[in-house]
Image (cartoon, rainbow, N blue to C red; front, top):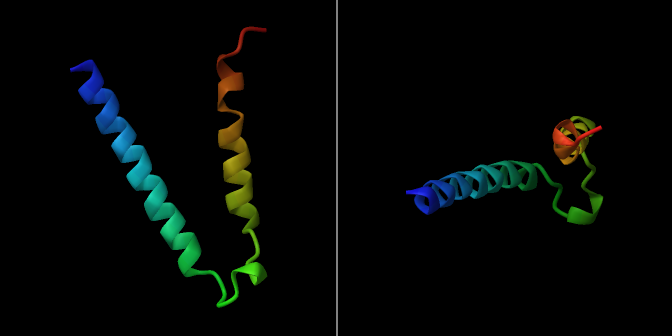
Length: 58
């Protein structure tokens, strides 16, 4: 049960990321080198990158 729960959550994580990534890629210009990062997405990524700090001991 423990491993099954982990794998299910991991599958959901990957599926969610794939949906998000597909949405981003669909908005890219014909030449991906001309794509620009959306500031709101960059902010969201940065906030998520720092989530472990909330659980760190002082």
